[in-house]
Image 1 (cartoon, rainbow, N blue to C red):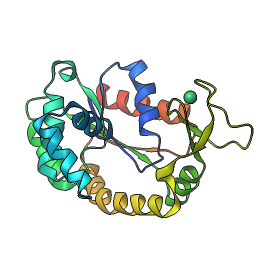
Image 2 (cartoon, helix red, strand yellow; image 1 turned 120 degrees about the vertical axis):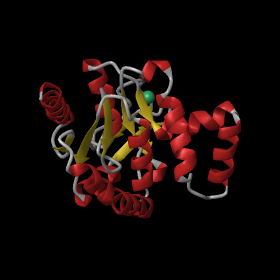
Image 3 (cartoon, helix red, strand yellow; image 1 turned 180 degrees about the vertical axis):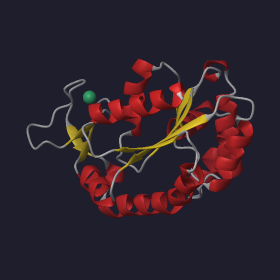
Image 4 (tube, rainbow, N blue to C red; image 1 turned 90 degrees about the vertical axis):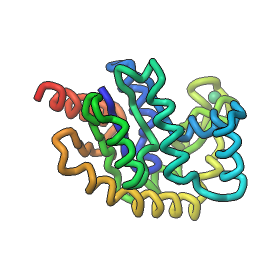
Length: 212
Ligand SMILES: [Zn+2]
């Protein structure tokens, strides 16, 4: 089962992937994590990525596609995957379609969330100083539920950065949603519900696809 998770920053794609893996234990392939890992590993591709990012540039479609298809070709992804962060552009989506030929169809889940909700969520997002776990600001004594560490605002959640990320996301993703929307395997779920309810809605959508 090959699933793409779309959704704006703050929609909880990482959280959902973790929950969904309990139901379908396929690898969670996150491009953010992969880029960090590529840089750490120091491979030729990793060095290329590092140079681009340090120069303030964006990873182009070709490099991104190489990274992702390399990862999807690994044995553990043969039975399927949860893909998060790719594709981001139409050319990437076309490359992925090409790569997927002869495999099971792509299931596309868009976790929909309004701009207002994204800004509200990201403004109140905290991160543990010790272990990096994300948390929402509930106003009470902010301690990490994982390790008890101090929770502080996420640096990349500063207001202008959030607005920029969101704008880039909308600009890139609106055409992508159009690209996939006509497929019977495309699903849009309401991301403004409680995380457990979002998970249930996604599971129901995927099961409807699989039984049809
Ligand atoms: Zn912690």
